[in-house]
Length: 207
Ligand SMILES: C[S@@+](CC[C@H](N)C(=O)[O-])C[C@H]1O[C@@H](n2cnc3c(N)ncnc32)[C@H](O)[C@@H]1O
Image (cartoon, rainbow, N blue to C red; front, side):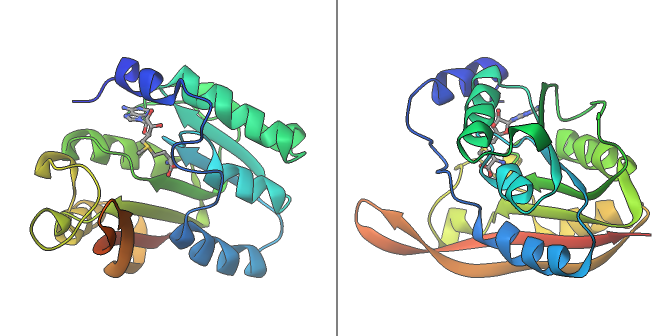
């Protein structure tokens, strides 16, 4: 398993490894939610360098990023500062599997590319769902396991790549209604050019 030390080392470079741009699926779901709700609060769990939570803050939302990598959060805070949203932005170091939120309860709980065992992922989702308001949204994005055999990109370890059916089975025990849980086909840049890559995306409503 990849521990905080691994991630700290990875993030201790000037470059934003996952870019400063919001993920396109987060943007797709987020744009719809933002358009249909008053300005709200969100948690970006395992939020890394902050590209997604800073995007929410730029839309006037209060955003809390939680990650076990201090190096990631230092960069996320710098990005929030750069974009002029530091007053709406909260960062804290914690393990995703059991955390306490300062903004709870929130309108959106986001988990994007948390690459851990399903056991840890489901503990993280369980805690995240507890911190979402009734009527709020749970958003998720993962590299699809199908990329191991039919695509490109993402970790090459099936143990940290959940499938739609595994996520669905877990969510059946949770107070959420799944609105979207599906693989989306796309492309990824590789040294040999653009290659097909599949992403698992989730939008669920808290009951
Ligand atoms: C692939 S990066 C994705 C970052 C961000 N969500 C994004 O989409 O840009 C995975 C992130 O998960 C964090 N992470 C991994 N395991 C974690 C855990 N158990 N608790 C908290 N954060 C964790 C890492 O530090 C890293 O920032």
